[in-house]
Length: 56
Figure 1: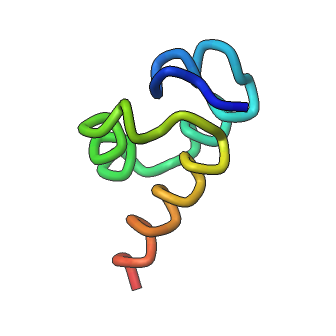
Figure 2: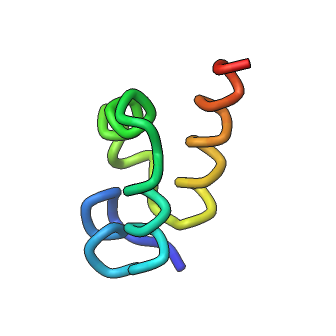
């Protein structure tokens, strides 16, 4: 399901909110800089995984 932006996604999709809450703060901060680019749980996971890959 697509949402208008990150805020609506986190408010309406409990699984997305739960996942987002488990992310490191720096990843959450980066995601918050592009709220319109995150409009589904899948896009949230993809974006977070891309950011986390830089942790290696």
